[in-house]
Amino acid sequence: MDFIDLKSQYQASRDLINGRIQAVLDHGQYIMGPEVGELETRLAEYTGASHCITVASGTEALLIALMALGVGRGDEVITTPFTFIATAEAIVLLGATPVFVDVDPYTCNIDPALIEARITPRTRAIIPVSLYGQPADMDEINAIAERHGIAVIEDAAQSFGASYRGRQSCNLSRMGCTSFFPSKPLGCYGDGGALFTSDEELAKAMREIRVHGQSKRYVHTRIGVGGRMDTLQCAVVLAKLELFDWELQQRQRAAATYDNLLFGNDAGLRPVGRREDRTSVYAQYTVVLEHRTDLQAALQAAQIPTAVHYPVPIHRQPAYAHLDAAASCPVSDALAGKVMSLPMGPYLSNADIHAVCSTLLHAARETQAAHLAAPADLTV
Ligand SMILES: *Cc1c(COP(=O)(O)O)cnc(C)c1O
Image (tube, rainbow, N blue to C red):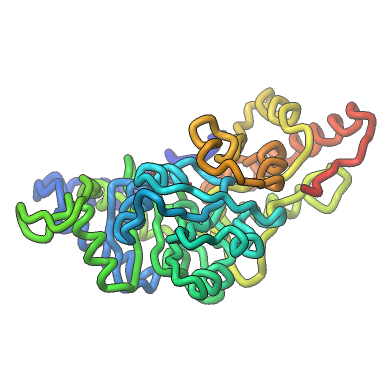
């Protein structure tokens, strides 16, 4: 069993993917070829945003979004510490300071009720992360940002394809960033990412920043980066889009199967909470539990791969802890010790899910008994 089964996905779309790649090899426009614009049009339509700008990676998307806002030294950007490092890295690379706000223990997404207390005159933006594929509380966050005249950038690296109150992730705030890293719900075969906005000026800025700040050939009106997504990777995403909606349905099927088998019993597990007004694309299927080390070992012994997203919150990382010394994120600290992600993907069979669940439930009950039958404490 693979943690994320990319081989079956390739087999399902093999002819489409091969055909798209061959077309690029035939026309030979490897940088900014026709597939780049074609993909941008398709993705803008998919999300409802006016503009999509493909870029070299999800990390590059975050960096370019912040550059387009002019974020730099002395500025502060509010974000969650319970995320992949790239969210904070983009802020720090520009000389700005990340300000960490704790997450909601139910959804693991940034808690909007805690944001306003950390806004200062230096705050320039808020970057909520739609963790595990479920959009953050974007309307509440947008309302706070509007009151203070600051921008919201959704880190939708895990949530492309999710919906929120009838709208699509990536188009839920001023700017949205996503990633096409191979294991993301919509992945390519290397690095890739995209930016979304309906703001004309920001779109123009981001297009220029992507190519070294160039407004015309060898006219550099801004400081930019080498941040293009290459044509071959765009071709792969175009091919994968054909099955994407079906794959999202399969992800829902897999998640529902897990839900039915894992919870509402005496094994002491709980799911990451989901809200009724939005969908998750289950970039990860993550469970909150006690005694993680023991349970991971039991699954590993049965050759079932697991992962932890994320074991150390960013405000505890050696290179980041000093940047926001005032950060107080007890929920993130607790969750970092209690989350475990299980194999997930559209091609994961129900038989495999049953195998994962029976191994996990058995191990969870045994571990509980071994810990003197102390009831699991999942109140973080
Ligand atoms: C994957 C990811 C990124 C970075 O995307 P890359 O394409 O790997 O650079 C940023 N933020 C989050 C939340 C991610 O999961």
